[in-house]
Length: 376
Image 1 (cartoon, one colour):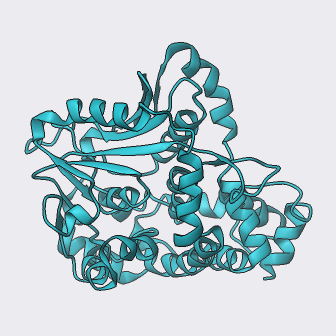
Image 2 (cartoon, rainbow, N blue to C red; image 1 turned 120 degrees about the vertical axis):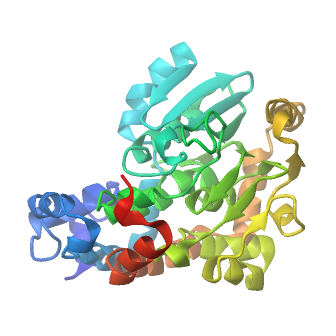
């Protein structure tokens, strides 16, 4: 399989942008010997994770080859930073109403802030296939909204008896759905090349490199209860983090058997290499109010004061205008994580995550640590 020649063909020598899911679909259709066809993937999707044949591993190798190439890989990263077409369709409604309900998320204009509230109450606001499209559309619209200056990410109230009615930032990937085979491999790539990277880098323009120009705003996170797994990963892209004094953060990816998004790349910048390895490989928990937690969180507050703290923070970050926000964000990224560094990381991630996603160890870990076989 020559992934690069296929990429050149489908993108007309990189004159058009194609997202990873459409890229894999077209490749499976036009070059069926290279990637599985759509009908085969649909049949595979009906199976529990333990019963899958691992057809999608080929997608991981295919994308790793593309991302591993400086030219094609950068072009693909650029494609995933563009506004989605369905975001274009939703913008007029949000602009008119100032609020929008999307699958798994609510977006609302509150003063100078575009507030995204995640909603998956049955699963502690976990991320899965039912939330990913709505989340990326919400991020697109929050960034595009000309009537707001900053963005806020927060978790909504949940149903679990232990936390009933309480806002929780989120429990990471939906492990129940993962065990049941209801999360495809490409979900990881769509997520981390898509909305997570858009939060970090902003929305790109077709005509310019994302390194040169983008639509971006400052992001504020409100950590209530906990930020587990993927939700802890998202914190590493934020500009300002408010956390309840009893909240905590964990990256239990080793226990789950997967790679925690771009946390391996980003967490060492916050807490150093040793603590990052302890968190990712040895399940170290960071209490937000601890010295280690304060390396990630900017401000620790009482549980009852999140609404007031958010209002105060929005006012603090916008009172003098945010004209330099995008420039300062680009300047930080230039030294910490230029797009080429991210591209090289994602090439490794694409290949390794495909192996993890279909590993027997994933099933064993979920059954041992999550009691996954008995969850519905």
